[in-house]
Length: 146
Image (cartoon, rainbow, N blue to C red; front, side, top):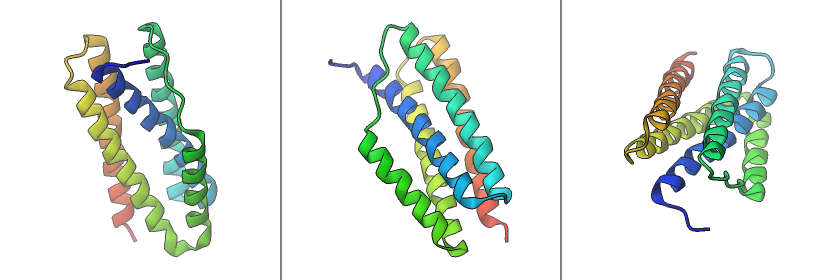
């Protein structure tokens, strides 16, 4: 199926949200019960909720969401888990990875919003941008704390 640039951009945002939710869950599990784990659990819930809203909006628009690459996702999640389990010294790496993913999500949402979408899409993408920007701030604060 050929997709327009708009459809591709929206699917990219959906995939980034879904992947982020899973990676945050993995990070929270690996981190245990500390403040970083609590932040990751909260962000996992928020990303999953936004992904569900994006998926519903895509379906309502008559566009079936694409399936993420299961092999790539499994390898990525496994790598994140292993790094988190290695040592406390690897925890900053895990936070930096999540920070980079949030910055990419922000970039994807801004790109999609720039494609002159309908107001309903603009509202949803604005929420994604706000959530991603908030997560970037929180992750940067967490990374800077001792």
